[in-house]
Amino acid sequence: MSELVARTGRQQQRYKDGYRLIAGCIPFKCSNDVEENGGDPSKKIVEVLMINSNRGPGLLFPKGGWENDETAEQAALREAMEEAGVHGDLVHFLGDYPFKSKRLQDEFSPE
Image 1 (spheres, rainbow, N blue to C red):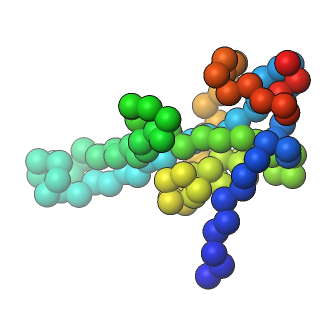
Image 2 (image 1 turned 120 degrees about the vertical axis):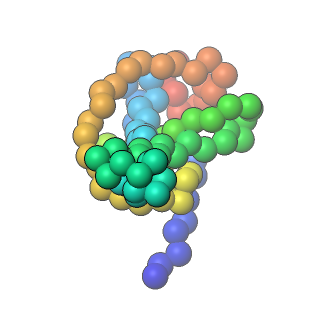
């Protein structure tokens, strides 16, 4: 098994209209363990994984910069492994939204 090396820096990251493009995911797993769900085999248990933030209090989903040499799907899978140590299958695209960080502007940001 090869060793995972996290990507660093923002030189290869994508920007559009002053926004840094990021990719992320909501890691989850489903099970229908009869013992855990009160004995009802028709009930499913869904567990969602969130991670701690290094920059402050609170939990968040794994996400990070979308780089020029990968698709959004590849970036989301990479970020899940880098930040949460999990891998899996992408099930569904949930959408996108604009978010502009006021605190994290740098020399690679167009503004």
